[in-house]
Amino acid sequence: MNGPCYMKYLLALSCILCTLAVTVACSETPVIEIETDTKPDYTQNAINANRYLIEHEETAIGGYIDRRGWSVRQLACGARVHEYVAGQGSAIGNDDSVSVSYRVEDLAGNVLYDNRDESFLAGRMQPCEGLDAAILSLRHGSRAHVIVPSQAAFGAVGDGDAIPPRTPLMYTIDIK
Image (cartoon, rainbow, N blue to C red):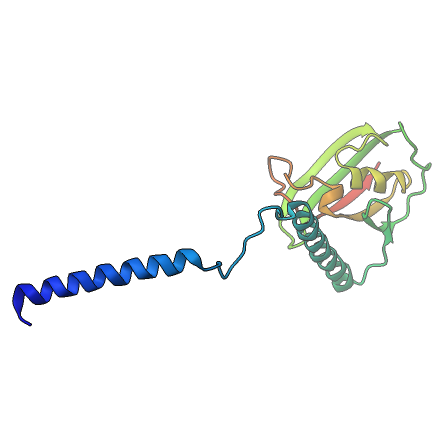
């Protein structure tokens, strides 16, 4: 065969093979079956991701404390308190007016806020839950380091200023 006859023969053969392939493909059961009733478990994925982040943060906090050789008390909210000067004043209770000087750092030692002086009512979760809980565990005149995990500090959003999201904080506080 030569030239145009050969091309017509190839074209006809190609059409027959394509028709045969389509017929066979359409009559066979697919190899992969996709279940449309099941949906991904996004809730469980989010829970697992949060667990991982909390465990990672707890490891970082533990290492920070170990490197300094501090003896700490862990509070129910997860904050750790290292009181290096015991206060001689009265115990601090809910709704007591408290004046506090403090410095805030991340665990890498970056200063986020320096020389802050604030007065507030204890027990009102100010400036954050973890620091408030630590203050309630101390006395007037105490000086302490307070390490606050992110979930007891400013959480997944940060403070919108100097504190980034999901950042554990180390406060150096002086309660007047």
